[in-house]
Length: 345
Image 1 (spheres, rainbow, N blue to C red):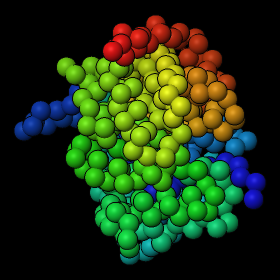
Image 2 (image 1 turned 135 degrees about the vertical axis):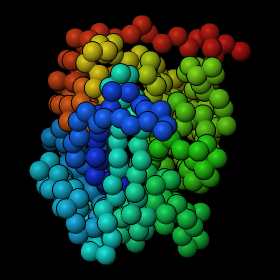
Image 3 (image 1 turned 90 degrees about the horizontal axis):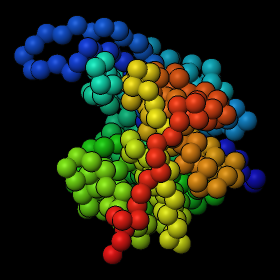
Image 4 (image 1 turned 45 degrees about the horizontal axis):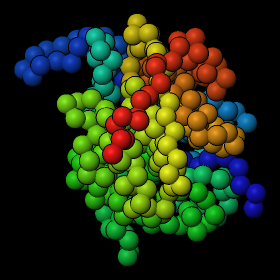
């Protein structure tokens, strides 16, 4: 089978996006300035982003939803964006809902969710036999009760799905969510031997490696590289890419380190950060799928993330790869990352 495209799996949810003037204090009443309802979750966001970045790349998805209005919305989103969906619809459960609050004063986000359908997802919902995709994008550990628990002889259901995907001829990537560090390590470390790639943020790579990558709350590029190398040694990945507000670093198994600063996004254009990590991953893998060098993958990843910041929802502002790159060039790029000093010695 000649493989082409992506299959996403795991979290499909409906985001109830709510804009607040600022994140409220406890015991106060606050007005919601705007509300929208849209698809969310790594399975949805990556799939839609990829279709917008590169319409020539086919995308499949596997997910579970309820037979309710939210489930119907998710199925419609997949259809509208040309995503070949393998949704399992269970009338006995409610579709996963996330209440995504964005603070207007600084663009920060806070998510509260009812997992519902995600808690019922199991490895048995995944069948890769007739899906000719090249790469599986799977997520999110920490959000799915059954998948997070041991399954057969495996440490958790994520391991089972990743192992089956590789056996079917797929390459694999795992999308993470920033949760308790100990929980993240417990869920993800057993998955590393079954991954071909890992694209995460600075806090997540630090949690996996047991390294403080944000001393005094600021990303330390040298520590990020050290953490990426540590995680590479624990798994089967050919590369690990790590993103943070100021830039991104990718470390290949052979030892090569790539660095790319982020675009200088004007603050007055930032509507919210919700979905920026998914857009980064989609941009990275879009360029990778097109056979471009790692340096170009990081550049498109940042451009995609920069474009996504223009909307309070997760994918509403993502456009074609070429348009995103032109936008980032218009914004300009931050000064090149300096990692020499941090890595010395």
